[in-house]
Image (cartoon, rainbow, N blue to C red; front, side):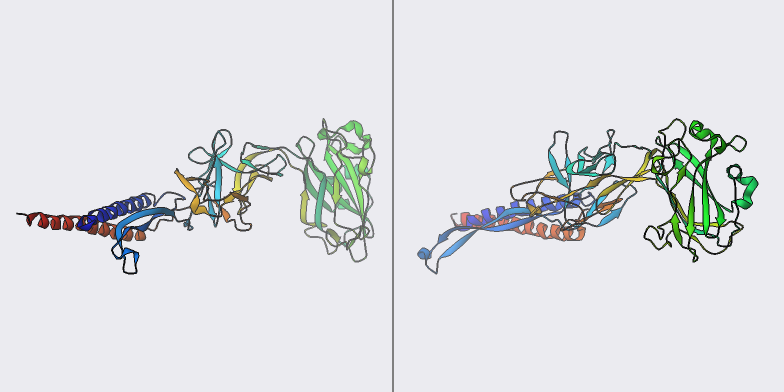
Length: 457
């Protein structure tokens, strides 16, 4: 094509460098965009027909310029930035968040800016819903991927079924006998009950009740415990009249016996004796007023030798009294709680969303799932930090964060753009010089053609 072919080669160079400058500008514009992945232009040379030589080894192939082969995204890890929002999430490693719109279309994103909408759904700024594994009211994960909702705002109460304690009873405590009337008035008979422990328990409707457990040493290596409740909280019709003191307002609802070895290890725990119409043992319980009758509460003082244990992991009989108290507690717990409202959430590296309730309990609300692709470079960007699956990306693979090839989830964190401003500015200068050089080719070629025209004058 002669000298005029330089026009077309230079024009292709201008077009290619212009396209590259456009992508550089886009990268710089998104240097502060959360989860943005930089893009770069790939070039390929153009060749025309073979000229001269008739296809022999001396044949020449004429260059026709350059073209844009493609635009390649870079999915390198962006830096992680801490935020004050517990629902801001960042992926440290491989994977994408999976989000959906109202019609069920699925998108993928590395931007983890999430919040709760008016329906309790976890949504990004575009209103797309974060997907994962929803938990039921008991905290059990469903095992299927769907929209995550935090609509659960109340934790139902749970009745107390067991009271456990560990510590020690003083081995030098005096031995005394006592009557039911005396245990109903423990303040007037402190010498008989040198150890006591208050504990709050909950009934079938999550209502709290205060119990007092009094200990008395009745023989060598033998202790008896008595459980007192408030008179106004117990169905008195199920108790013997002698078990209620209208002056102290105490009601004896249960008692039992602990037997120790000479070394002070727990040898035997008697069956709990409930003072109600159902009698003792598992068939009985404590009858809280207006609630389900016969609420059995097990008293766990450790694994006794009779039960196959060593008798050392619970309440021992060793040492002396501390501050005139024969009972020194190391732990005291019960497994019930009252109703509570959702006070906050936390998200672990495995994506588990844990709800914190104001009654002191926690429960699993859901789990964020991640999706990865064999070829993430093949994902099609559609704007708003979103990608969609394409034929080049491969099949989406869902998984649990932190397992296999999936990255971990960091809460109160966002992944910054992976744009390197220094590199982009250098690339911009390079492309600018390329644009200028190609422009010079056009002006130079134009001058040469002008000389040819002048030859005819």
